[in-house]
Amino acid sequence: MRFLPPSATRDAALLLSSRGLRAFGDGLVSIVLPAYLLALGCDAAQVGLLVTATLLGSSASTLLVGMLATRFARKRLLIALSLLMTATGIAFAAVGDFWPLLVVAFFGTVNPSTGDVSPILPLEHAALTETVKDSERTALFARYSLVGTFAGAVGVLSAGVVDLLDDRMAALRAMQFIFLGYAAIGVAALLIYRGLSAGLDHAEARKAAPLGPSRGVVMRLAVLFSLDSFGSGFFVQSLLAVWLFERFDLSVAVTGWIFFAMGLLSALSYLAAVPIARRIGLVNTMVFTHLPANFCVMALPFAPNLPVAIALLMGRGLLSQMDVPTR
Image 1 (cartoon, rainbow, N blue to C red):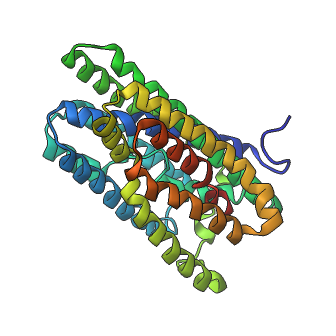
Image 2 (spheres, rainbow, N blue to C red):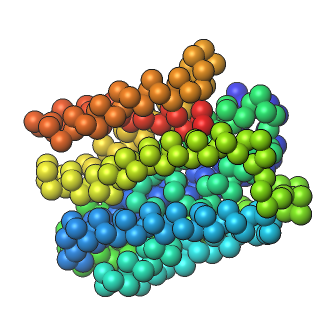
């Protein structure tokens, strides 16, 4: 059975491969990052500050990449960002003080959630649109999201290896090696991007203002998704991990299993979003799945015990990401 749509090119397969690798690293780090900071002696407020720095830095770098995308080939930008990913992993493994880590978090690519917020994402999205027919675009993006979410879930689950070490210093060293693994994933992504065809670049053909008649629609969607992202910022996976650690005294391994199950449900929801969107429309699919997902989040702080909290998290995992491929 063919996984990609029939018209998808080799470049589409390469981009899905890079997405899977990066998502595995993001999932791994999203759990290890708060555990690492807490092990270094940071408190929950400092963890939140560092997570905020990563999101602000990602926003700034995404805007910068958007401006550079009309001047440089996508392939070159993807390779450069892969090098930045490698440097970020090495820096987190080598630095043990909070304030230097805060600087690295702002300028680096560490992702506090399995959902991709790096500047690599829009470059891959733009390239993906040129690897498949328009009629199969939603299906390709659903598979792209599925690969990313499933790989991120496996990465989260793999973080449980830290709990096998009882000694605090051994656990710290293990987490530092995980950050070095994140750096190695950056190298692997670089090699994948080197294999992309030159036809995806078209840098000389892209104008400085490429939106044209779509500008109004894109701006309204940008405002809508900015509001959505503002709300999601209160529910970043790294901060959710801290809440589970402190509220229910969970280990990294158990938290990883919970996030793994959420990731599996999200991955399945991407495929479900395609037939649902064909039946009720793209916008309706976004709206009528997002509302109940948000109610699950609103109810979570009032969960009286862990099973109820897990049920609410599973409900959100199943419904909250159906808007991603439909966008």
